[in-house]
Length: 361
Image (cartoon, rainbow, N blue to C red; front, side, top):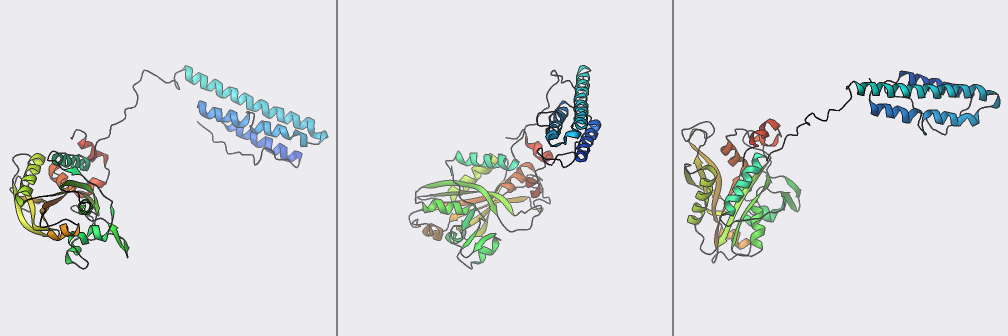
């Protein structure tokens, strides 16, 4: 058992004012030495350094003999010698105790014992699905494009056919960093598409994975941050049929050949015409459940042909070029693929949950 040493000298060079003061210091050190006990070699070494080391307390007190009156030097010398012997004897006791413990094997390290196992980490399910999505579209010739998470109003809204006071802006509750000028946490990775189009290097065939932010109430189906993958293809004579075949390929590769797909007309300010893509519910097999709201279908992404205004805003001739765009939430795809019903669990860092994906690829 280790006794904690609480005695400290205020200064090793302290000049004691009287014989009484020195004797008090000696008595305090004796009490600390007598109460000290440990069978730990490291703690015992601390004792040696503090009490009998070259800079220890005993040596410090002996250095004060020069300040003792001549008539008191004999008595003080005897007291200091007694203190030194007490400290050295205690040190020998500690060494003998430790040696006995090691001889009996109590403190002996058995090198034949197996080491402590270190559990290996695993990829997060969001990362697993993100990599899967990226690899599918890379096989179709899509390159990866990335951009800043803090965006200006032009790249996040205006260039995407959402001018100031456009009602569609209300669809995305935004975290603003500043209002004038307007800077914000991006609400979608469409801002990366704008930056790529502004480069003017055609044709463009990119996917834009990344984290986005929206000021939403956190629940089982929504969060204030999540991950998206958006795609963009601009070239000569791109059609809606090209968009459908691209997304058909993606869905079959991600969910299997037996998955059913449907497109529904929708509205997005940056595409025209626009659609939402549904797949048959993976949890109930299309029969109807709480997840699919008993319809047998689950929406996984939005898509459409890039609006001519967006092309013109980015310096691309909309009469010569056309293109399609799509976007999906990685969390939504992950929940469907692994049948996870609560979005919040992705960001809770629960090791029990994450361990389930150690063998996932």
